[in-house]
Amino acid sequence: ESAACEPEIVDLANFLKAMGAKIEGAGSPTIKIHGVEKLHGAEYEIIPDRIEAATYIIAVAATKGEAIIKGARPDHMHAVLDKLLEAGVLIDWNNKNGTIYVRGTENLKPIEVTTLPYPGFPTDVQAQLMALMTLAPGISVITERVFESRFMHISELTRLGAEIQLEGPTAIVKGGRPLSGAPVMASDLRASAALVIAGLAASGTTIVHRIYHIDRGYEKIDYKLAQLGARIQRIKGE
Image (cartoon, rainbow, N blue to C red):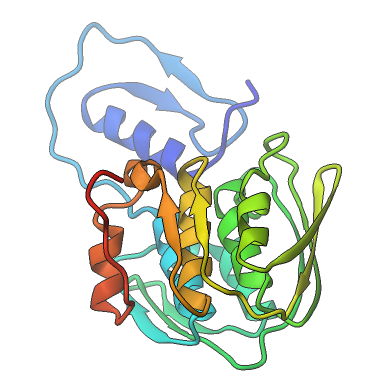
Protein backbone atom coordinates (compact mmCIF):
# COMPACT_ATOMS: atom_id res chain seq x y z
CA GLU A 1 0.00 0.00 0.00
CA SER A 2 1.01 3.67 -0.51
CA ALA A 3 3.50 2.60 -3.17
CA ALA A 4 5.37 5.14 -5.26
CA CYS A 5 4.00 5.56 -8.78
CA GLU A 6 7.17 6.75 -10.53
CA PRO A 7 8.07 5.31 -13.95
CA GLU A 8 11.17 3.79 -12.36
CA ILE A 9 8.93 1.61 -10.15
CA VAL A 10 7.03 0.41 -13.20
CA ASP A 11 10.31 -0.26 -14.99
CA LEU A 12 11.67 -2.27 -12.06
CA ALA A 13 8.48 -4.32 -11.95
CA ASN A 14 8.69 -4.96 -15.69
CA PHE A 15 12.31 -6.07 -15.31
CA LEU A 16 11.43 -8.48 -12.51
CA LYS A 17 8.47 -9.80 -14.49
CA ALA A 18 10.82 -10.45 -17.41
CA MET A 19 12.77 -12.63 -14.95
CA GLY A 20 9.66 -14.56 -13.96
CA ALA A 21 8.27 -12.51 -11.08
CA LYS A 22 4.51 -12.07 -10.67
CA ILE A 23 3.74 -8.43 -9.90
CA GLU A 24 0.50 -6.51 -10.31
CA GLY A 25 -0.34 -2.83 -9.93
CA ALA A 26 3.04 -1.21 -10.53
CA GLY A 27 2.43 2.47 -11.22
CA SER A 28 -0.51 2.57 -8.81
CA PRO A 29 -0.59 3.09 -5.02
CA THR A 30 -1.17 -0.64 -4.49
CA ILE A 31 1.27 -3.30 -5.69
CA LYS A 32 0.61 -7.03 -5.33
CA ILE A 33 3.54 -9.46 -5.42
CA HIS A 34 2.94 -13.19 -5.78
CA GLY A 35 5.99 -15.15 -4.69
CA VAL A 36 7.63 -17.57 -7.12
CA GLU A 37 10.16 -20.31 -6.47
CA LYS A 38 12.94 -18.70 -8.47
CA LEU A 39 13.76 -16.02 -11.02
CA HIS A 40 15.58 -16.60 -14.29
CA GLY A 41 17.92 -14.46 -16.33
CA ALA A 42 16.63 -11.92 -18.82
CA GLU A 43 17.79 -9.23 -21.21
CA TYR A 44 16.16 -5.89 -20.51
CA GLU A 45 16.61 -2.27 -21.56
CA ILE A 46 15.98 0.20 -18.74
CA ILE A 47 14.16 3.49 -19.27
CA PRO A 48 16.09 6.75 -19.70
CA ASP A 49 16.79 8.93 -16.66
CA ARG A 50 14.15 11.68 -16.71
CA ILE A 51 15.99 13.69 -14.03
CA GLU A 52 19.24 13.69 -16.01
CA ALA A 53 17.37 14.81 -19.13
CA ALA A 54 15.63 17.58 -17.17
CA THR A 55 18.97 18.77 -15.79
CA TYR A 56 20.50 19.16 -19.26
CA ILE A 57 17.39 20.94 -20.52
CA ILE A 58 17.60 23.43 -17.65
CA ALA A 59 21.35 23.92 -18.21
CA VAL A 60 20.68 24.80 -21.85
CA ALA A 61 17.88 27.17 -20.84
CA ALA A 62 20.04 28.87 -18.20
CA THR A 63 22.79 29.61 -20.70
CA LYS A 64 20.36 30.67 -23.45
CA GLY A 65 21.71 27.86 -25.56
CA GLU A 66 20.21 25.35 -27.94
CA ALA A 67 20.39 21.57 -27.89
CA ILE A 68 18.73 18.32 -28.87
CA ILE A 69 18.29 15.72 -26.13
CA LYS A 70 18.09 12.23 -27.60
CA GLY A 71 16.96 8.99 -26.01
CA ALA A 72 14.64 10.61 -23.45
CA ARG A 73 11.07 9.81 -22.45
CA PRO A 74 9.12 13.07 -22.72
CA ASP A 75 5.95 11.26 -21.66
CA HIS A 76 7.57 10.79 -18.24
CA MET A 77 8.47 14.49 -17.98
CA HIS A 78 5.25 16.41 -18.50
CA ALA A 79 5.36 18.21 -15.14
CA VAL A 80 8.88 19.52 -15.84
CA LEU A 81 8.33 20.35 -19.50
CA ASP A 82 5.06 22.16 -18.77
CA LYS A 83 6.69 24.35 -16.11
CA LEU A 84 9.63 25.19 -18.35
CA LEU A 85 7.23 26.15 -21.13
CA GLU A 86 5.41 28.36 -18.62
CA ALA A 87 8.76 30.00 -17.84
CA GLY A 88 9.20 30.84 -21.50
CA VAL A 89 11.77 28.19 -22.43
CA LEU A 90 11.31 27.06 -26.03
CA ILE A 91 10.76 23.32 -25.99
CA ASP A 92 9.36 20.78 -28.42
CA TRP A 93 9.46 17.01 -28.23
CA ASN A 94 8.68 13.82 -30.07
CA ASN A 95 7.34 11.00 -27.91
CA LYS A 96 7.92 8.41 -30.63
CA ASN A 97 11.68 8.82 -30.96
CA GLY A 98 12.37 10.29 -27.51
CA THR A 99 13.84 13.54 -28.80
CA ILE A 100 13.51 16.85 -26.96
CA TYR A 101 14.44 20.14 -28.63
CA VAL A 102 15.28 23.00 -26.27
CA ARG A 103 16.31 26.60 -26.81
CA GLY A 104 16.87 29.25 -24.19
CA THR A 105 15.13 32.60 -24.20
CA GLU A 106 16.02 36.20 -23.43
CA ASN A 107 12.57 36.58 -21.85
CA LEU A 108 12.64 34.06 -19.01
CA LYS A 109 9.54 34.36 -16.80
CA PRO A 110 9.14 33.72 -13.05
CA ILE A 111 6.87 30.83 -12.07
CA GLU A 112 5.35 29.11 -9.06
CA VAL A 113 5.93 25.40 -8.53
CA THR A 114 5.30 22.84 -5.79
CA THR A 115 7.11 19.52 -5.68
CA LEU A 116 4.85 16.49 -5.44
CA PRO A 117 5.08 12.72 -5.95
CA TYR A 118 4.85 11.57 -9.56
CA PRO A 119 3.19 12.66 -11.81
CA GLY A 120 3.71 16.00 -10.03
CA PHE A 121 6.82 18.14 -10.30
CA PRO A 122 9.78 16.03 -9.10
CA THR A 123 11.69 17.06 -6.00
CA ASP A 124 14.86 15.91 -7.77
CA VAL A 125 14.55 18.85 -10.20
CA GLN A 126 13.73 21.46 -7.56
CA ALA A 127 17.31 22.67 -7.05
CA GLN A 128 18.05 22.89 -10.78
CA LEU A 129 14.84 24.83 -11.42
CA MET A 130 15.72 27.23 -8.59
CA ALA A 131 19.06 27.94 -10.25
CA LEU A 132 17.20 28.77 -13.45
CA MET A 133 14.67 30.99 -11.67
CA THR A 134 17.44 33.15 -10.21
CA LEU A 135 17.83 34.38 -13.80
CA ALA A 136 14.14 35.17 -14.39
CA PRO A 137 13.23 38.80 -13.59
CA GLY A 138 10.50 38.87 -10.97
CA ILE A 139 9.49 36.65 -8.07
CA SER A 140 9.35 32.86 -8.34
CA VAL A 141 7.85 30.73 -5.59
CA ILE A 142 9.17 27.19 -5.08
CA THR A 143 7.54 25.00 -2.42
CA GLU A 144 9.04 21.67 -1.34
CA ARG A 145 6.41 19.11 -0.29
CA VAL A 146 8.30 15.83 -0.68
CA PHE A 147 11.43 16.20 1.47
CA GLU A 148 11.72 18.42 4.50
CA SER A 149 14.44 21.08 4.43
CA ARG A 150 15.76 20.22 0.98
CA PHE A 151 17.18 23.69 0.52
CA MET A 152 20.87 23.41 1.36
CA HIS A 153 21.72 24.78 -2.09
CA ILE A 154 20.15 28.15 -1.29
CA SER A 155 23.08 29.45 0.76
CA GLU A 156 25.49 28.46 -2.01
CA LEU A 157 23.39 30.07 -4.74
CA THR A 158 23.41 33.31 -2.74
CA ARG A 159 27.23 33.22 -2.84
CA LEU A 160 26.87 33.64 -6.58
CA GLY A 161 24.62 36.66 -6.13
CA ALA A 162 21.18 35.05 -6.08
CA GLU A 163 18.54 36.62 -3.85
CA ILE A 164 16.49 33.88 -2.20
CA GLN A 165 14.40 34.03 0.96
CA LEU A 166 13.29 30.88 2.76
CA GLU A 167 9.90 30.82 4.46
CA GLY A 168 9.18 27.36 5.88
CA PRO A 169 8.85 24.90 2.99
CA THR A 170 8.82 27.73 0.45
CA ALA A 171 11.68 29.55 -1.25
CA ILE A 172 11.00 33.03 -2.61
CA VAL A 173 13.37 33.70 -5.49
CA LYS A 174 13.86 37.31 -6.54
CA GLY A 175 15.29 36.69 -9.96
CA GLY A 176 16.98 38.80 -12.56
CA ARG A 177 20.12 39.79 -10.68
CA PRO A 178 23.32 38.91 -12.55
CA LEU A 179 25.23 36.00 -11.06
CA SER A 180 28.98 36.22 -10.48
CA GLY A 181 31.38 33.32 -10.17
CA ALA A 182 32.56 32.29 -6.70
CA PRO A 183 33.74 29.21 -4.80
CA VAL A 184 30.73 27.13 -3.67
CA MET A 185 30.28 23.78 -1.97
CA ALA A 186 27.94 21.00 -3.07
CA SER A 187 25.93 19.33 -0.32
CA ASP A 188 24.21 16.58 -2.31
CA LEU A 189 23.57 15.21 -5.79
CA ARG A 190 20.95 17.65 -7.07
CA ALA A 191 22.50 20.64 -5.31
CA SER A 192 25.69 19.82 -7.23
CA ALA A 193 23.80 19.98 -10.51
CA ALA A 194 22.12 23.26 -9.53
CA LEU A 195 25.46 24.87 -8.69
CA VAL A 196 26.98 23.72 -11.97
CA ILE A 197 24.03 25.23 -13.84
CA ALA A 198 24.31 28.50 -11.91
CA GLY A 199 28.06 28.55 -12.50
CA LEU A 200 27.57 28.16 -16.24
CA ALA A 201 25.18 31.12 -16.25
CA ALA A 202 27.36 33.30 -14.00
CA SER A 203 30.05 35.68 -15.16
CA GLY A 204 33.60 34.82 -14.16
CA THR A 205 34.81 31.53 -12.74
CA THR A 206 32.84 29.31 -10.39
CA ILE A 207 34.53 26.48 -8.52
CA VAL A 208 32.20 23.80 -7.15
CA HIS A 209 33.82 21.86 -4.32
CA ARG A 210 32.80 18.34 -3.27
CA ILE A 211 31.62 17.69 -6.80
CA TYR A 212 31.92 13.93 -6.19
CA HIS A 213 28.25 14.07 -5.18
CA ILE A 214 27.29 14.66 -8.81
CA ASP A 215 28.80 11.40 -10.02
CA ARG A 216 26.07 9.44 -8.23
CA GLY A 217 23.49 10.64 -10.73
CA TYR A 218 25.30 11.90 -13.83
CA GLU A 219 27.81 10.09 -16.01
CA LYS A 220 30.57 12.36 -17.33
CA ILE A 221 28.46 15.50 -16.90
CA ASP A 222 31.49 17.74 -17.37
CA TYR A 223 32.35 16.02 -20.67
CA LYS A 224 28.77 16.20 -21.96
CA LEU A 225 28.41 19.88 -21.08
CA ALA A 226 31.77 20.63 -22.69
CA GLN A 227 30.54 18.91 -25.86
CA LEU A 228 27.68 21.44 -25.86
CA GLY A 229 30.14 24.31 -25.65
CA ALA A 230 30.40 24.87 -21.90
CA ARG A 231 33.73 26.01 -20.52
CA ILE A 232 33.98 23.46 -17.75
CA GLN A 233 36.67 21.17 -16.42
CA ARG A 234 37.05 18.80 -13.52
CA ILE A 235 39.81 19.50 -11.02
CA LYS A 236 41.61 16.38 -9.84
CA GLY A 237 40.95 15.62 -6.20
CA GLU A 238 37.47 17.12 -6.28
